[in-house]
Image (cartoon, rainbow, N blue to C red):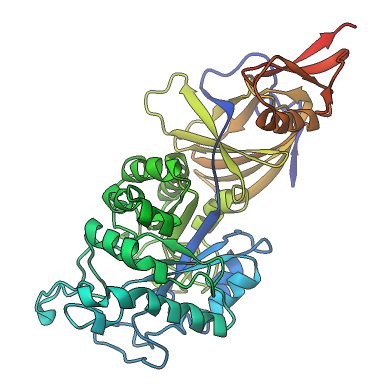
Length: 512
């Protein structure tokens, strides 16, 4: 671990002259959504043969891993146990039932993680085209596969059989989804729903989900391809359906996070629902090469923007692929991918969020840029216990003085560390440095190298966190006073912290 001493002015400056190129972040103490976590999918495809290979989840999940994921997505295949026929469109020639993700799910649960299941299709006999396939292919007669009206009442009992099977195998599933991409007509396993059809299914039949037996299981909305808010808004605007759904979900293919996802999250927040982005893959179409560093920075920006849009959970697509977190071992993708089950750069980029942000609360913040016309700079701030976590992404080649201002908050930073991932002429996947701060401060200048993702973990003084807790619980009224440990004073005197009626705090000297 490297140590940054206070005389290293380019990295930590509490006051003084700043460099010309500045990036300023102003943090407020307005708390937004809490972050449940980050994850990836264990599904057919690049994960093969995944039923017996649990190394990806061992590398990625839990506090003991270098990456710290805590949410695993698995497919609820349309087949019941023992019905392991391999249809022509199952290109991987493997059993297509519920056994595949079970070994990985057990490890994730053992490590304290969350496991949820998503159906790509209900059983074929429940559907209008009589097959699990979506129906979008010539050999399928281009017949759109939807859930038959007389089988709506069978859908949630079918999910109950999945929950029971997993429970009997030692895994208590935490949540189940209505449908993967209900708005995408596919030739593989799929089922179409309109927003009104999903509303009918959830409103009139979701009470059949056996929450009494499988205590704690939550219902996730259908996960539309582009996070179309029409799907979630239909549910949330109906009081009966709203009471049934716990998590609003979707994917962001073709739609940046700050558009559809942000729109859907606005109503979800109003009704106290979580918002999960449950599938996307940045640069999965790059062919036979590894992602370059600019694409890794694009991934970091995407995760950050999902959180800024209102996400409480971010779940990537395959956990193992040459464009993902763990290598497939195929040499055609380059030397970095030649060893199977090796952590790839994208995993370390993800760790900035999964290792530090999980369990935190997003703080409202704003950014300004000096001498910058293209704002390829992003940041977010989070509070967790007595720690302030700041993630900054610099997609430009130039280094920046990153100014962090907390002057309207009760927070004071007393120490910190920086985790840096950067790539320019060289690549550092995980470089950790300590930051020494001469005295408690609400204004810092920290170095932000070009082409980097940086996480700053600052320890806050006891007085600042104690007063924040008091601010959250005290009713508005005249100014109140606390000692430097955050204890309320009936008769203040000497050096105290004054909290005004509007919630702002400052140090004052009170004479008797």
